[in-house]
Image (tube, rainbow, N blue to C red):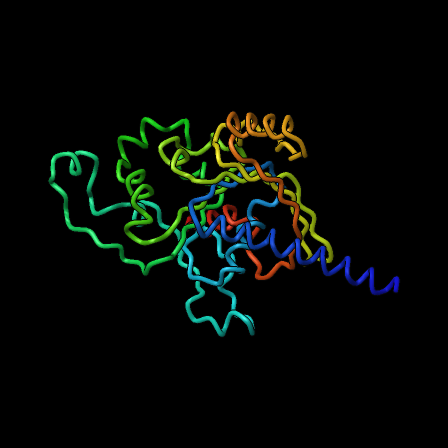
Amino acid sequence: MIIAIIIAIILIIELINKLKQRFIIRTFENGSVLVGGARGKGKDLLFNYVVNKRKKTYISNVNYGNRPTAETAKTKDFKHIELEPKKQWQVGGNTYDDFINGTLKHYESPYDKGIDYYVSDMGVYTPAQEQGKLCKMYPEMPIFQALLRQLQESNLHGNCQAFNRPWDKIREQFETYILCRSCKVIFGKIVFQKLYVYERYQSAVDKVKPMKKRWGKAAKIEYDKFVATYGEIKKVNFHYVMKGKYDTYRFRTMLKEVEL
């Protein structure tokens, strides 16, 4: 009897965990996500998990999963494409002026539908402190992100240590913000992550903690006021088995590979 109860509890825990895993995957499938958190809190681990769970071709500055395994070899569409922002984040030379004045130039996305972008350390590519220069030199980039779903049925995901680090013209277009709170890896494979998932940028910047739902009319009114002020905030603690390997020090590798 005791063994049966223990097994039932384990099954319930795993079922709840599966639902949490599915929630995270759907979050990345349904819109662009900006992931934040201090060093070592699992930002790239989360990207690695999502990429390998979805098993779809992706564009990234980090190779999260094109190394063949018995499982991924069966999925021909699962491959990594190297990120080239200047070449990829553009819409054929069209800017706001062209949309306003009706002087649009021909453009078709060179990629298949549904290929998402995953950018590690997005603030390195689009630093907020250089917003004036970015607006002048790369006016197509914000348009590219705004039209990405229409052009390619895709999303742009990024991660950074602080949510306000990337260029404001880019970061304001994310639908969801995820704060990586902590991350533990056991036996080099089993990952335990704690996240907060926000629908509002400022709440993510302020690291607002979610409010627990309680019974009663007064509690519901209090909760509704909280949501009206800060938006929906979800606490997601889940675990998974890590698949695929990636270069934890990708930028060091990139810089060393540059010819002298």
